[in-house]
Length: 226
View (cartoon, rainbow, N blue to C red):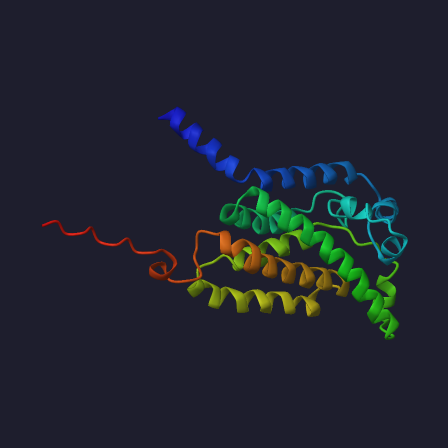
C-alpha cells in the first residue's frame, strides 16, 4: 500500500513536471536577486529586461532573460501562485509539451506586442505610454495569463460559455487596477492563449467540440445470420 502511494504520487508529479520546472526557475531567480537593492535590481532589469529599444536594436535574446527575471527582487509568492495556476491547469489538460510551447511563446509574443503598442500609444501623445518606453519589461505573469486563456478554451462547451466571459472580464478589468504596461502584456498573452487553445490545442484535445454522438462514429450492428 505504501509503495502504491509513492508510485501514485510520482505519477501525479510527473504529469505536472513542466509546471514544477517553471516554479524551480522562478524560485531560483528569486533567490539570486533576493539581496539586491531596488536600484541594483533596476540596473539588472535594464540589462536583462526587454523594452522597445531592445526590439528596435534586434536584441531579441532579452526575451529569454526577461521572461524569468521578475519586476521585483526576491520571491513573490503571489506570482508563484498565479503562474502555478496558469501552467498546471493547461498542463493537465493538454500535456507538458503543449503547455511549455504555448506559455513561453505567449510571453515572448506579449512582450513584443506590448513594446509595439506602447510605442504606438506614445506616438499618439500618451504620457503614460511615453514613460513606459524607458521602463524595461520583465516577469512571468504573461506566461500565466496565456495558460489560463488556453486552458479555458479546452473546457467542455457548456463550461466554456461561462468561463470565457469571466476570462474576458478579468482581463479587461486589469486596465483599471494595475499599470498599463502589465495590463497590455496580460491582454496580449490571454488573447494568444485563447487563439492557440481554440485553433491548435482544442482539435487535439479529449473534449470534442461536437457532441459525443457526432464526434465518434457509431459502430454498425452485427449482421444477422440466417
